[in-house]
Each structure stands twice: as structure tokens, then as C-alpha cells.
Image 1 (cartoon, rainbow, N blue to C red):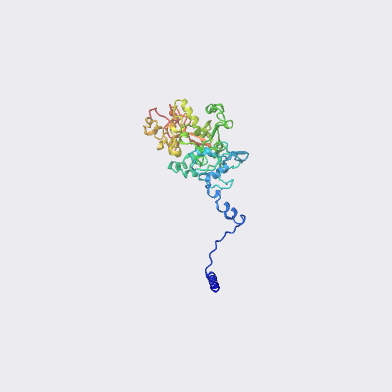
Image 2: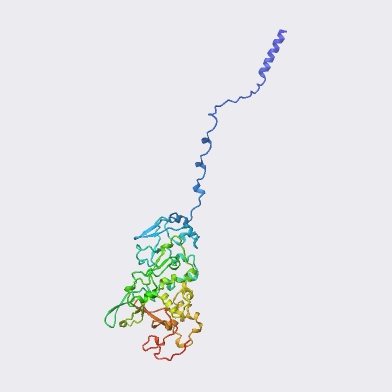
Length: 437
């Protein structure tokens, strides 16, 4: 019995040893808190490593104008030219309200070096009596950096292209003689044995102090215009000795300050320019100097200083001529194309500006007077000469006898202006007065 019990126990132990052991349930090993949480700096990528800097994507690239305004938007920005200060501040708000608001600065101001002082080409003078000669680039605050060439890139109409050939652009009879060659001072001995200087030497290049040359801004740039000598010019004409040039110095000069408009960059449109004579008379103002004839040289005529059409027009009105036609643009409708043929000079040559545009009933009816211009007869003071086969009033300018586009008119005419012995227009010296138109 004991033996059987012993054998059973041995077998039970053997079976227990051969059976697979049960898988124990693992117990988690506790880890101290400081050992397992990963610090934020170890798992999160720093913002500087992955986030794109705001300057790279958030801010758009500045336009050329915005870059210019970085400096020129400073109200105190100015440049010293000689002993004068030139304002360079551009008011962004005012400029945005103008007609060129959508045009980049560099579209007009070409060839600008982005690094100040830019090396911009500056042209001094032009329609500014504050200015000195155009060859002096150091002593005037009036200059421009945009020429007509820049304007024509956008304003490409034929009439603007024609401007470059107009008398307003080429300043006819000033720097050049009619064949286009530069004027030169000419010395000549008169019949009295004395030496005279005829014509004038313009090598000093001060014509641009008044004449526009190659810039549309001469007329279209809004500027301050001030008569340097106060008073009615008609009254001033008679105040001084008619033969004196020295006492008349600033008689009809206008001071024009371009710099007052730099901040706003305002331009005068056609309506502004054609509804007032303010801009026109700033150049077309002058005086008659009395008889400047030089018999010893065979030069005869009335001396004219500058271009006194504005005053002549006023004198005409006092005589009942053109009392209401006092605006230049009433007759001169093609100022961009003011060439000889289209001016009052060429009225009888089929030009656009003709007296008969308004006075159709006054057209010449006789063949003998078809070469006589209206102003040839109706000018109040000047004598006449032949020019291109036409009879015009003459005046002395540049110490030469030249045709004059007179606006100093009268209704009644004197036939003896032409019909006298020794006249220069080949008219018979004796005539019977008759109606010619």
C-alpha cells in the first residue's frame, strides 16, 4: 500500500515537471517621473527652424514708387543747389489723387540709379526766370529731370509728336537762323563808317530761361507765376523812355517757381490752359522799344522786346478789335502744332489759324491783295516787308528786321503803309482807295 502511494506521488511530480509553465502576468516596472516625460525642447522643433520668417512671405515686394517714397516721403527732404534749397518731398496722398497716380516714378524719371543721389540727368532752366543759363548746373533751384521723350512714351498721339517740330519746341528765330544753323554775332560796317553788331550770339545758351526746348512740363507743370515788376504792363510801357533798354530790366519778366509743385506733382490739363492766358502771357509779354531803325545798315522797323502779344491784344480791345476774343486759345486751337504754316504768319498759306475762320466775309476779293496778310494791313504801328512772298508787319528783333505776328490791330487801315514811294513790297506808290474785301 505504501509502495503504491509512493509510486503515485513520483508519477505526479514527473507529470508536473513535463507540463508547460503558465505565463506569468508581467508587472509594470515603476519609472521615476523625471526619467520618462520628454522635455518640450527635445521633441518640438523650435519655431525658428521650421516657421518661415514674416519678411519672406507676409510682406509683398515694394513697387518702384513705394521705394522712392521711402526717402521722398520725408517732408524735410531737400537738396542744396548752390546757396538755394530744393524741396524733394513728394506727398504720397496728393500724388495718388493726381492723373499719374498709377504710373511708376521710374517710368518718367528714367535712368535713375537706385542709390542716392541717383545720378539723374537734370536740365536747368526752361520757362523759369528764377533760373540762370542752362549751362550753369549749380546755381538754380529750377530744373527738370523728365523730358518730352519720357512723356511721349505714353502720350503717343500724332499731335504730341508734332510738338517736337513746332515753334514752341524749337524756339524758332532765337538760337537758330531760319535754315537751322546757330545764330552768330555778325559785325558790319555801316555807310557811316561805324561798326555795328547785327544778329546776336547765343552761345551763352540762356534761351532756355524762357524757351521750353524739350519739356512738356514748361506749360503743363503747375507752378507759381509772379510778375517781377508790379503794375499794368501797358502803363509801364509809357512810364519809361521808349528808347531805353536799361531802365526796363524787369519790366515784363515773370518769376516762375517750379519747386512749389514738387510735393503734389500736379499738371495743368487742356481745359486749364485754354480757359486762361496765365501761362501764355508769361512768355508772350514784352514791350515795343520805339524806332530802332539803323539807316546806315539799311535796317528799318520798330524795336520789339520779347513777345508782347498779350499787351497788343489788350491794346486792340481798347480800339474795339477783339474785345471778347481775349483768350489765346480762341484762335490758336492747335498749340502742339504751332508751326509756321499753322500760325498767324501762314494765314494766307492755308494755315489753320486764319482771320477768315471768324471773318469769312473779309476774305480778299481782289487778286492784287491776295499776298497781303490781314495783320499786314491792320497792324496799328509797324511798317511792312515781304516774307515768303507775303506782306507782313516787320519789327527789329535780334538786331535784324523780322516779320512780326502783330496782335496790335485797328479796324481802319492806312493804305500809305504800303503805297508810298520806295516801299519794300513792290506796291505802286499811287492808288485809288477801293474796297478790297
